[in-house]
Image 1 (cartoon, rainbow, N blue to C red):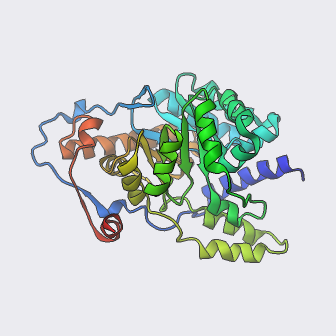
Image 2: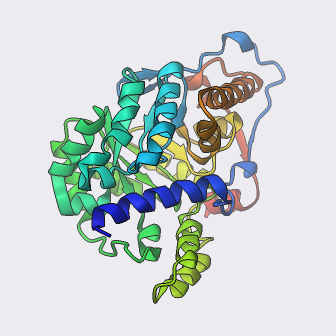
Image 3: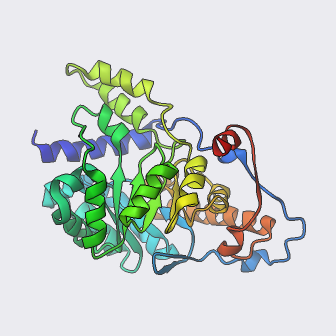
Length: 355
């Protein structure tokens, strides 16, 4: 099997595992964030404005369809469904890692279908930091062109890389490559984690390097330690048992999303996207009061998307209903008002934020 085919096959493995098994671990921490109830809200629930400004574009809602899939022919339809929803609801959306299609152009339509389905949506391309070091602006430009992207996400997934037998283990030079991409790219650069969160120290270095936004990708949602451990468990090659054990050992590794949002927002020089374990409109509201501009969901939208446009639309409607109700009960008529709402912190999240 060539490198190209291995990458494509891995993408399908990931989609199947996420859709067929429990790949979550831990808590994102939002249960320890309590929004202060406003018994006299003085606003009209039916007139609450969900629109938000993000990197020069007005989106209809802070719900962001986070990166899920692409890079295999069998992922094309789910990406079309997701793109159609982004277009219909005026949402931002990120595609999955484009590495497979950058290695094998025959797979590009599994990503470009998103732009076909969403000609006006804010779309984000996606490449890995390690691949950025290796391929530089050639892959930046190609990823953007593939989907006519409005921004490019550079993902940090070193826990995943550490467990994959085919993983890239050299993280040297990533920050310098990100800084160069920020200087030379024709679109804004967003840096995102993929399940372990971003600390205030790393966020500060990223903003100083010129990134336009940071996506927390915190702990408490999809666990790539769990996914890669499960993939290793199914293989018989030498060393796979050890990798499966490593995945199990690292299941609890990471910064809970609520903490990561708070830390990144403290040092932000641009928007923050809260991702990692968000399941409801209330979770999005809590992310916003902690300092986020958008709340991203992937796994929570995957099963509905696999069931089709109607099912996904129903899930999005429910999330928006929950978000509006949460805003109403905070007395927030719009997203800027919500960002100023008061909240209480409990338990472990309170302890971590105050440490």
